[in-house]
Length: 409
Image (cartoon, rainbow, N blue to C red):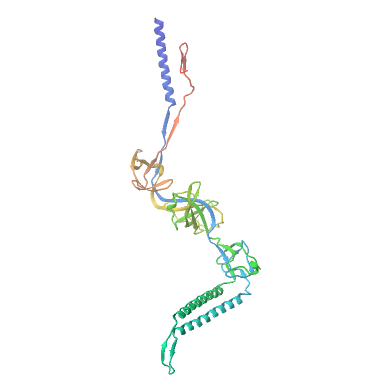
């Protein structure tokens, strides 16, 4: 009887010990959250909201240069790739037949003028037909209404023919057999050669494009803008063009075209938007390719950077300005708490404690938000961050007591 009681006491003692060990192990294996908060200072800055897209540079000012008249090409003075100056002669037609053509056109004008004068006189006489006596008294006035209508119609036809002939003469007098460079640039294509006589040897037709010239200082880029952002883009709006191959280089630009029709690919709706570079002087403080760039509120302009040399086809990132505010109070987006229909931030007080304060917001980008009410410059806000750590106990398995079997397996 005494041995049985002793054995029961030993079992109870062992179970108590096992329970204590189990509690100790459980406390070491639990996940313990550790709060790591960052502190940010409310400060003033400039907030920029923009729409971005990627594309390639293209020449913005490309002009086809046609011949003003028909004729045989006498000379072509340039080739593709040549740089030219404004007013430089680029090609010319053979002028052998020019004076003959002018004489023929002048003759046509004179002929139609004579016919018009003759028919006007005939009409005038028809409208004043009278009969008189021997002594000269007017006895009666007779007119033929049908004949007068016919004569009036003939006069109108003569006037139209004269106008057409005069226009042809004026066009010939104003036309030049030469192709002249309208501005400084370079030739991209040449479509004619000296001696070209056109179809059946009659010369190239009037309006034949002799060559194409581009302005090497005017560039544009086209991007696709989503249907969610297109309504924020306005014709004439400000933009910047970042050159991917030139880190940190962005050029000022303007929106010059917004496509009225959509470009739909795989169900995604976009609209083509074209911006034209307005200056080759890089803008200050721009970071192309990042929508919603926050820049310092103030600062010296520094020295004006030198103009850069662009090339057709360069990869670019276009940022179209949607909204911009200067010298406004800014807080990080991660510091803002939204609850119960309001927006709040946690303020770090001087004694190290925090208090929650409601704020009013303005515009936001991907990083910062404008605060219009509820904060003052220099206050500190808390950016909460929470991480978790877990400790795993050493060893494993249950506890076995000799002669009593095992616990925990």
